[in-house]
Image (cartoon, rainbow, N blue to C red):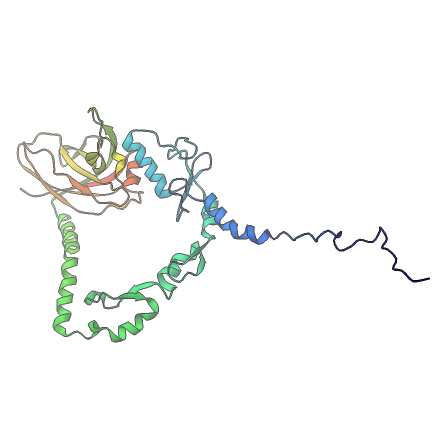
Length: 338
C-alpha cells in the first residue's frame, strides 16, 4: 500500500493562524521628550507666556505670573482706575492676595535650556553664568574698545584679535585723544557728584519722608496724578506733585504705551516776601529697594513763582511704583544763602 502524507491535525496551527507578536509600546521615551515642553507650558507666566526668570508670583487660585508682569498688571489697573485681575480666572490681584511661589522658582531653575551661543544644554540656574563668562562662543568686545576698537566676536578669537589689533599700537598722541573722550563722558557724573557734595555745605538743610497718593482729575476723561500731604520744611509749607507721562500722552487710553515715566514738581503753599532759592533732591525711602537716580534740581521761588519746573523721576521701576498704594520717597531740601 502506497504511503500517503498524513493530513495535519486540527490541533496543529499553521503560520498564518499564529497571531502576530504584540508590539512593545515605546512611549516612555516619547513622554520623556515631551515632559520638558509640558512643564514649560504648565509653569509659564499667564501674561507673557514665558517662564519666569526670577521671582514667580501666583494669584489665590494658583495661576502663575512673573514679577514683571505682576507689577505691570497692578500698574495698568492704577492707570485705568480699575481693579487688576488675573488673566486666567479674573480674580482680583492685589499685593495682599498674591504670594510668591518658591517651589515653582526652584523647579524652573532646574529645567534645561539651550545656550544662545553654543547650543549647549544647561540648567536655568547656570545658564547666565555660562553665557556671560564660560561659553567660548559668547560675543565679546576688544580689550581696547575704549581706545576706539569696534571689534566684537566669539570669545575664543579674542586673543588672536588682540595680537593683531591696531589700537594696541597707537601713538601717545592718539592715546591722549582717547583718554580725553573718556573723561568727557564721565564729566557729567563727576559734576553731579560734586554738586551734591557742595549742597551738603549749605547752611540750611532739611529732609522728610513723603508719601505720594494717587488722585484723579475732575475732567470728562479723568487723569491720574500723585500728590503728597502738606509738610513743613525750612520754615515754609510745601507739597510734592507727580504726573505719569503715559497719561499725559494718551489720556483716553494710558495703557497704550509701554514706555512710562514719572515727573514731579515742588509746590510752595505758604506766602513769602523775599525770593527763596532751593535745591531739591529725591531719593528712595528707607527699607525700599526701588532705585532712583540722584539728581539735584534748582528752583527760585518768589511771590509769583510757587511751582518748580517738572523734573523727571529717573527710575527703572516705574510699573512697580505705579502698582503700589503710595509712592514713598525721601526729599532733601537745601536753601542757598541770600
